[in-house]
Length: 156
Image (tube, rainbow, N blue to C red; front, side, top):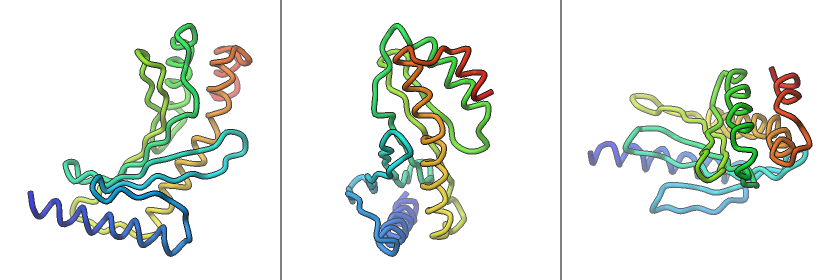
């Protein structure tokens, strides 16, 4: 257990060093081994939290959509999430039908391996690109500006 925590701290320090080397602006929470940052997307802002999880030996990035899905659109968004996820090679969208929260999540395992700066950066940029590809479409479905059928046609 102590060995797992030591490895997690090393991975967290590597993440911090990578962000610093690239002059990223971020907030860090050393106790939770997490950083919060953002990227400007083509339309909606992209905020993410990247954390090191010693319990699972993973680095995880999570990006919440900057809107809540209203109750009357939750079934449509659940379908849209399934359609979107089917197109993805890495990461996935998670949706809570109970509270309307929608997020993108990607993980990579560091068990018995070393994560390079390039891989950590890749996780951030691939996550941002994926969120940017879908966030406006999800938003338009929630606002009734895009039907689920049109979403499927555009994405599928």
